[in-house]
Image 1 (spheres, rainbow, N blue to C red):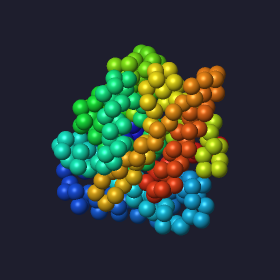
Image 2 (spheres, rainbow, N blue to C red):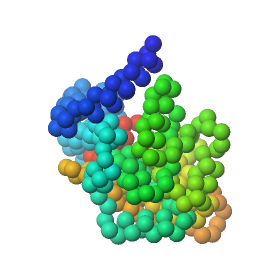
Image 3 (cartoon, one colour):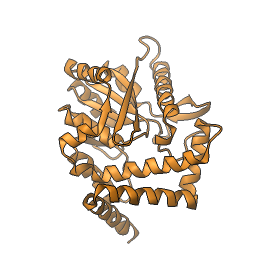
Image 4 (cartoon, rainbow, N blue to C red):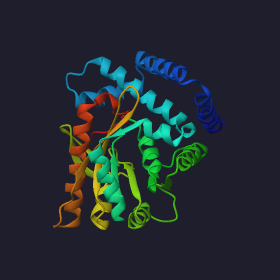
Length: 287
């Protein structure tokens, strides 16, 4: 019964938010974020602790702004399937130089690994990649209840991306992703939080945490270029900044993976420090 209600809630959310005028949807989600800030529940408290690791002299208004940013992500995600290709492109900004990096990588046919922290609107970034005519694949955590997981799979597939389950698939996700890179795909992975309990330990904002080894392994294994991608919001757009990460060419594989993952963590930290309010980390991160 509970799972059915959760699934119904997501379905209703998707349909209702799409139908609302944009200014109304914005006001509703901002009000919900402000209410969550006032209630100061477990998610808000966790966000506050995480942001204090990033900004030691944390003004509490940054927590409020972080919740507003997170609410904006959900509002835009619910509405994303209704947007035209031109609206997706107009709502996304990347510098000409960084666009050329991606265009060149995709034209070379080796694919590209785009590793992202939970910043800005990663679904909008994926939709932008697809809008450029580039094939894209990602990995999805198997959520509970199963109906919600299937909704998220269908939602992302409707945006034009291939989705590989993190667990329970017929093949290991890394094998599928390596194959797609060889076929010239963009592989986009959220990679600032380890879900496998076998991640690589890194230093991050002065503390220790674990991050997935997947992006580093794929780049080393296939030779595809690897970029850390940070996203942030302006009033009207999602903005992407790419930082190239070049894995060490020599040494034991585990050492190279650890060094590359640390470089990714450093790239994430640089972007998060610039726009901490747009980092949506409401889960435990540091060890």
